[in-house]
Length: 305
Image 1 (cartoon, rainbow, N blue to C red):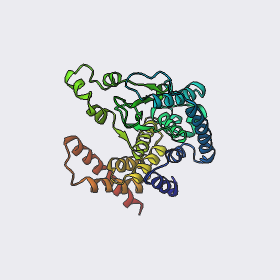
Image 2 (image 1 turned 60 degrees about the vertical axis):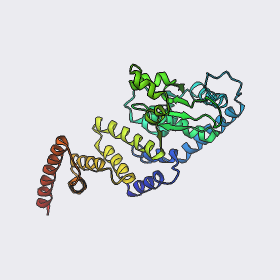
Image 3 (image 1 turned 90 degrees about the vertical axis):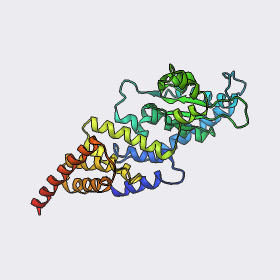
Image 4 (image 1 turned 135 degrees about the vertical axis):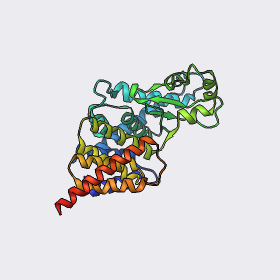
């Protein structure tokens, strides 16, 4: 991967308010190195302009469920009708592991993706349409939140599942998905703000980008596409230099690719950074395996000099 792309991605991801679409299109360049972001950003702007028109026309008189902000409900329904009804964006359940689902350009071209990329698309369109929508790190499935307007009594935020056509999820459904529905004590606890903070935590933009990268790295590893997986690890290390597991993985991937000098550099750095950490038996065994790799790599490098 070109160093300038890694640097540009780190700058974009670590800026005070990252542009998710720009950063996501940088990620897509791992699969599509010659990708030009401009046409896709223009396409997002066009979708956003039309979404803004639909949202402006949305009537707050639409019957909203109990405890729901009618204004936000009408706007979300207008967004859902446009994106999932008219434009036919849909979750790709049959080919979930296809790396194209993690590339924003392909999500726009093919109108299908996985939860986090469809959620990112939704957030970017909503932002352009003037509707406040944020990411939610729900366990195992990325979701969205459209907060109720302040000052309204008894209004709950809307929780949106972009992978399933913008479905609005009730708290009971969320409890069942989280495995708390049959635990009376847990159910009582999650009726409070604890439910929101524990099961529906706000996902920052850097967290969203990191989750996208981790998803895509896992896909590439399972496909044995080690060069791309190593590129993903490089982006993760650039965004978070303290991510020692990514440093380790990048070193192991370099080892698989017979880039011995890079493998030695990363694995030695991993051992150095984690040597003082408290580790359990499993981690100690892993450290011993990494140390064996380092010794082998040192011998290899010495034989080449």
